[in-house]
Amino acid sequence: MTDTTEALLGIVDCDRYPLADPSFRAQCKSELDRDGVLTLEHFLVDKAIDTIRDEGLEYQHLAYFTSDSHNIYLKPDDSELPPTHPRNRKVTSSKGCITDDQIPRGSALRALYHASAFRGFLCSVLDITQVYEYADPLSSINLHYADEGQELGWHFDNSSFAITLMIQRPKRGGTFEYVKDVRNADSGEMNYELTEQVLNGQTPTQTLAMNAGALVLFRGRNSMHRVTPVAGDHTRILAVLAYNTKPGVSLSESARRTFYGRLG
Image (cartoon, rainbow, N blue to C red; front, side, top):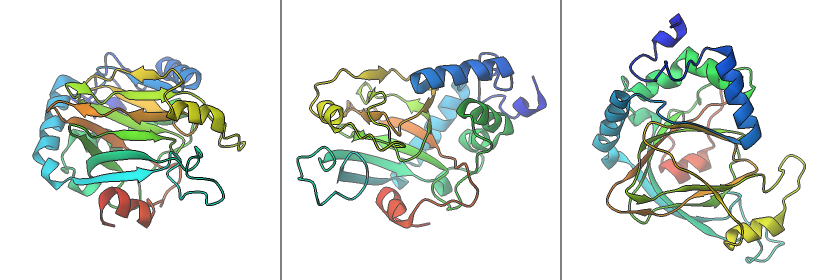
């Protein structure tokens, strides 16, 4: 056990996942580069899962719930294209969220988010130099809630990576589905034909079976993904750990109003 990983004792299963080990980091990077997703089941120890879940349920009444109709690019429509074009077609997303300033100061989520061993692991696996928290008070750590009937519609991410922790699975539904490498945003190859097939349910999808305590790193900028509607009375609770590769970056005011209902 290194000094940098001692801060994660009681939070992460460090025996199963030696975050500071170079060979383990290389193995994880290889899997993420190959598959576009890395899933580490049982990443959190049971006590940490229970504590974070209990915190989430205690503060769920503070969540800002939204139901939004949007295109899959999470951008304004293209007025030069018809509403039926994949660029403008609408999907629905509905969920609740509590923000960083509502996460308890002593939460295991906060300890994990700021731990140097975890950040070093992320930098190695994601092949980046450094990670920074958001400059605004809301966006760094979020807990997302999805109750019965709520879902996350098909979309692409605008960021190059997403880091999530499953805290509580629903009884049914709430499945993460994705189609890898639908487009190439960097080259401008949008592949609208395949995009439309995904929206029409004509393309096989891959799924992630995330149990409570699983850590997922996902590259969603070019891979379409969604969360299917939740069924049953067991709320789906997901922690989102958001970092930037540059310091001093805030989520835009429009995005904060949309996702959180406030600026700070």
